[in-house]
Image (cartoon, rainbow, N blue to C red; front, side):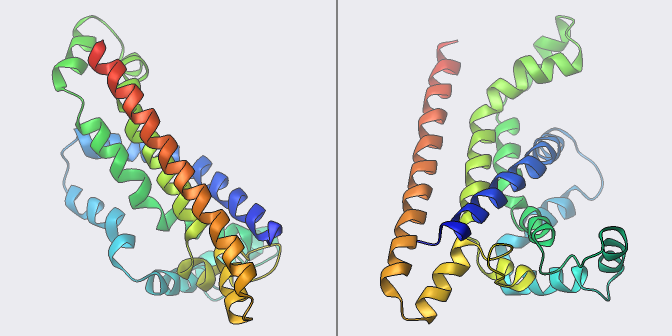
Length: 224
């Protein structure tokens, strides 16, 4: 078991959640409630990582993060090292590729809230931020929890984009998915099997926890 790669994957997953979930709640809520020009294009852009091959997404991100790109040059000028093949570049790529897994469940959760419930809060004199905190977020919680778990699990298992943008630098960009691939390439079936089993167990546990939370919150909401 490559615990260094596993720890790096967990750190990448947690950092991705910290950066992506607040933005996903804001964007998912906006897409659920607002009608604005270009809304369809925004939804299409969010869903794009689902339909494009990971290597295609990774290629474009690598080009955007490379030393010849404006972003890559600006990053190197500020921090003294390149964005591609670094943990920071890997994190930014993870945020982008996980957009549909984070935004779409949140959008569906907010869209499922009956308009009359939000209107009742506004009519009772609650400020918009209180309606969000006291009414919308508790009702949308199952969708937000699902988005968080899907994002974390997908980050652990992501391979194509991670390999293209981060390479396989041990201790810096070599995640558990890449470590499994390297073990298979080295004909270490036992090591690859152990790491695959650990990754499978973590994913099943995360999805099971999400389903449990969603059912309990759903029962409380119906009872209320």
